Each structure stands twice: as structure tokens, then as C-alpha cells.
Image 1 (cartoon, rainbow, N blue to C red):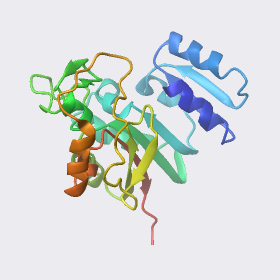
Image 2: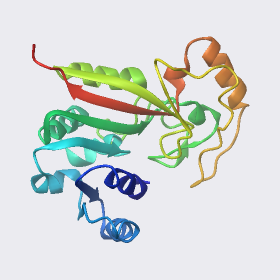
Image 3: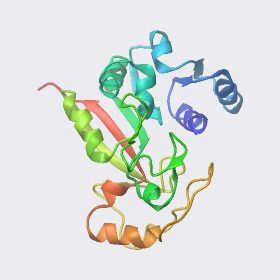
Image 4: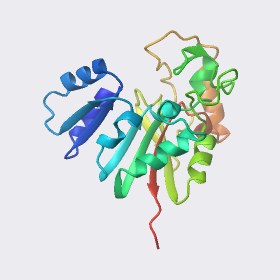
Length: 229
């Protein structure tokens, strides 16, 4: 997934730096994007490679990595620290783009396995039995709370459908889905799943109730610093 995103971004900007967790992922990225002369690929997690990063990026894109903040930072608020650290590498006016799963997304109620732990209903049960400092996804409200606790930030939510891995449509608060639009819900291709109910019909019910944003399978969050006035 990240390799595909890397190539698309490289087609649109002057320079891209990509962090891969291991040598295999780095080799796949370099092979897939071998013709991209504006791409640098490093092996290592964010905490290990932070000193190699520039300080004037226009964008920092976190594709599924926000949930892994406890792997990078050992403090009491690793998700806050991750955001603050990322802003240290942005130029004025730069933005952080977070693509992440919603722990209470519709697909997890219906029977998709939680991506982080490859089991059913882990996230919607708020990771009961897991240490608070382990990886986790968040609901929309929980992400908002984290961002609001970091001063001087502005953010916008978008809603990739069916999810951020294979989006067919990206909705916004200005253009939410209408009844009958959410029918392509089989989006987990890398692991088994069950189907406990008709997700399309339940989405219709949530859309009528004005609750689509809360149960969107994924979020795309654009975060920037407020301008000093």
C-alpha cells in the first residue's frame, strides 16, 4: 500500500522521502518505483530515522503509521508526540496527512478482522486486555481529542470509502454519502472475514441518522498549524 502511495506522490512533487520498516519493503519500493529519480527510500522506523529527515517538507504522509506511535515513542502520550515531532520537519504552512482506520468502523462490526491484531472485534471493544501503550486505532472523536490537546492546530476530516487502502470515493463533511451509495463494502482482501449483516442497508440507516462520519471505515485527516494573526 505505502509503495503505491509513494509512486503516486512522486509523480506530483519535486522530492519524496519514504521510510520503510525493513529491507524487504525498501527493496519492493525501490523496484516498483525504480524510474522515480526524485525518490529516496530509507529503512527504519520513524524514531530511528528522524535525524535523517529534512526540516522543510511540504507534506508528511502517515499511511497506517499513526496507530504505531507507541512503537516509536515510549512516553505517556506517544500519539501526541508523533504529531508534534512531525511538525518539526515541516516548513511553514506544511501539512500532515493521516490515513488511518476507524476502530469503530462499520466493517469491524460486520466481521472484518482488526488489522493491527488480526482478530475480530478487538477495536470495537476498545482493545480490552491490551496494554494502553500498544498500537491502536481511534474513533473520530478520539482523534479530535488528541489534536485538540495539541495547541494551535487546524484539521479536516475526509472519509475514504470503502477504506483508505482501496478507496473508490472520498467523502467530506461538505459532501456526505447519500442513501444507496454505499454498496461496495467487501474491501478486505488480505485476510478472512465474516459478514454478520448487510452493510449497505446498515449504512443507509446510519446515513439517514446523520452518523456516517462516526462509522466510516477509515479517515483521511489533514492537519496544519493555525496561522498567527
